[in-house]
Picture 1: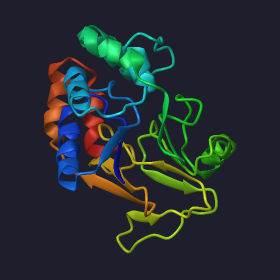
Picture 2: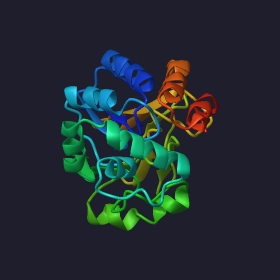
Picture 3: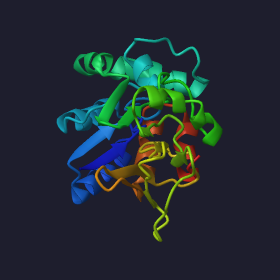
Length: 243
């Protein structure tokens, strides 16, 4: 089965449209969203519309929990808090209800787990191999070999015993069935790995091949929508830098 993995859309409509156009070309049998559909940018309702219209299984990210009122945004920085309050006022009631009902964790297949931040804690960050290794025992208890996660906005692959064979394309990895992996496809709406293109991933479950994918989108349109909505301009400026 071919599965599209998307994460951290963050109400960036232009990036989301570009990724969905590419997914429509690839035609995966399933798409899974690792959370944070909301936060940071100016089109939460439109992005949620697109996700819901496609019936994409979606996890609850930390921004989603705050925007829908399940949590207070105490631990967010000033810019993120400003957007959360603005989006909470903009969000349509049916979208608020949908956000409140989405799960924190799902299984993609019998040995593949999907979370937002880290297994068992959507607010934790996995930034390096040592961070990932803290959660190996969680995967063992869940009988999982692969864990897809988001939250850091950085495309990454960490294997318990190394990353495994890499193709000559440099963005494809063949996963060893005797290894355990933590994979972040990168962020659709706000990449932070110095590549401003929208990021997502494709996973072939039978062949156990994961591909990191990037696609260009109209950053200027997203940046302009931030300014027009009166949101913090720093959020617009960071998109060009991919950080």
